Each structure stands twice: as C-alpha cells, then as structure tokens.
Length: 200
Image (cartoon, helix red, strand yellow):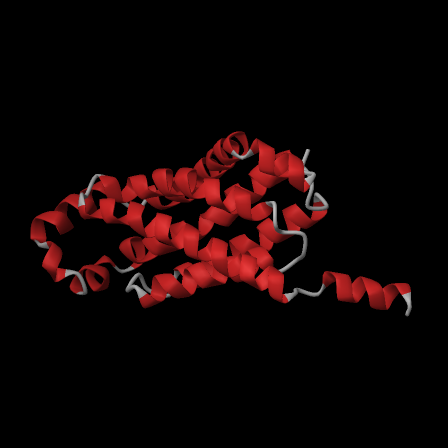
C-alpha cells in the first residue's frame, strides 16, 4: 500500500469522528439554547454575543481535543446553522457558520491540531456563527418581528433601540473576541484533557 493511500485513509473521517461531532454538537447546542432563553429580556439579547461564546467555548475546547482531521469543525458548525433555522432563527446563521468554520478549520489544521494558542484562535473564529442570528435584526427588522408578535410592542421598541445599525460589526467582533475568551477559559478548565491530547 502506497504512502499516499495510507495518508488518504488517515485523513478520512471515521465513524468515531462523526460520533464525536454529534456528541459535542448536542452538548454545545443545549448550552447555547439555555443561554438564548435570556434573550426574552431585551438588554440580554446583544449580550448573547458575549455570554454564548464564553460559556460555549468550554465544550468546544473539549471538542478540539478530539479534532485531528479536517471537516469535523465544519460539520459541527453546519449542524448549528441548521438547528438555528429549525428553531425559527432563520437561514442567515448557516452561511455565516460555513465561512467561519472554514477559517477555523484552516487555522487548526495549520497548527497541526496541536498548538494551544491556535486552539484559542480557532474557538474565536468558530463562534462567529452566532452573529448570523442577528443579521435579520439589522437587514429586515419588520420581517423579524412579524414572526415574534407574542413578544409585544414594548419588547420590539426596546430591542430596536438597543440594536442600531452600527451594532452589527460590534456584535461580530464580540463573538470573535469572546469566543477566544471562552477558549482561554475552556483551556484553563480542561488543561488535563489538553495535556492528554498533546496540545501544548
């Protein structure tokens, strides 16, 4: 068997890889949805781009100790985008998730799946997908609120005041920066797992 053939087989995702993706996607999604419940309070809606990436960074960093092949981060991110669409958040998160995940994949692959600093940067890029959920609030708020009439006019007015157009890039940056903070927190809490995985 040639070296190239062995390399191709090594780089191919296995059933175990996909199981890991499924398990950590489920854990991450449950945590994010629990945090998303805070969005019923207007002031907490933009704060989701702070709290979500920081808390979500913990299970994601544990997931990275299992990621040794290209594609695992992308699949997890796509799952998040699809689940957001199914839970009524719209389709915007999906394309954002694909782009941010591809960047995260490239960063983690370039680090040879083993550098702690790169794992934190990877976590930052991955968490940008959350920003996609806010795009409708800036591009078409009327349509967004038309599907959420149960929240009431006061909620709509309060949230609109909290999210002027210039907040869009601010939330994007928050997702990235707070994603890295979540990565730092996750690495600190999971240092034992990182050592076992050979991530220095």
